[in-house]
Image (tube, rainbow, N blue to C red; front, side, top):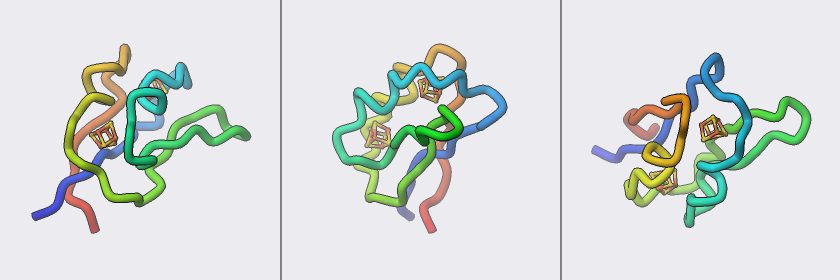
Length: 64
Ligand code: SF4
Ligand code: SF4
């Protein structure tokens, strides 16, 4: 089973911390909405983004 990150949009405040710590390009900032989204790029399951998020807006989910 492969795991990746889900962004809970309602909790994201667009601070960008998760994007800065993500080394795989899995998380990117949408310049229009100011919110983070999952690009679908393979996640290495380091969970650095989860620890970096101040609002607990990131969760672990199964990758498709
Ligand atoms: S767990 Fe690691 S690789 Fe995956 S999205 Fe978060 S920071 Fe990026
Ligand atoms: S760290 Fe959390 S609140 Fe900040 S942009 Fe990422 S998901 Fe949104």
